[in-house]
Amino acid sequence: MQLKYLTGAVLPAMMCTLLWGSAFPFIKIGYKAFQITGPFSQILFAGLRFSLAGLLVLLFQSCRTGKLPFPPRGSRFSVLRLGLILTAAQYLFFYLGLANTTGVRGSIIQGTGAFLTVILAHFLFGGDDSITAGKAVGCIVGFTGVVLINLNGAGGSFSFQGEGLMFIATAMFSVGSILSKGVTKTVEPFCASGWQLFTGGLVLIVIGLLGSGHLAPTGLASWGIFLYLAALSSVAFTIWTILLQKFPAGKVAVFNFLTPVFGVLLSALMLKESLSGWKTSAALVLVCAGIILVNHTGISSVGKHPKHTSKKEMNS
Image (tube, rainbow, N blue to C red):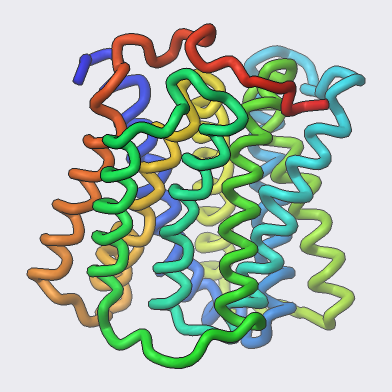
């Protein structure tokens, strides 16, 4: 694996998944800090978090460029659509679904997102995003690691209100990732990430308020947790957007297998949740092996746009 690819893609992608994984325990702590119980209060909390995250990205970009970033007129609908799918729809279905299923099953279903992104990228982009035997095996190996770390009794029957909505949320992330790659052909990544987070967050705020969601912060520490969650979203989504702009979507998406692994590890450390040593070690080995299998081919060409230009424009 080339050093340039390691520092330019692997480490940033791992940082994104580490940040997203840290959201699991911090969200649980945040729910207690803001006395959040029902799904609409959770949606309101998410909306406020993502709106602030978007504002932080836009403020950062304004300081960099000296002007408020706006998407080109012809790309504004594409950015709005991205916010509706990647932020609003994904997290609306996520919270409604999670309220009707277990965290274990939710994590496993989320692990299918890498599969969906790899498949979509194959048909829409081709080139470096084409499915190969190595990618297929890598996805299966990585997903096995996600399942293994969640093997704590995920029994029960399938329900559309639970597992069905969680799968739709996962599909929204995959579709949003593909759309993001198209949007950044004409919109600067910071601008695209900031506006999609902000607009998607506003939609979630409206839905949360319409559902009578409310927050009751218990002290100053509550806002510290809230600010951390907003900051991690702004950093992770922006870096992810840049990675999708520069590298094949399938090679980036497979790193998402690390998110539930980091989530379990950090939840065990911060929330004192039970953790099986051998399962965790085996899961990490499988996930890392899957990532290597997906990324071991064509690394020298990664980052060269002609190799993976889309078969159709994704931002029309």
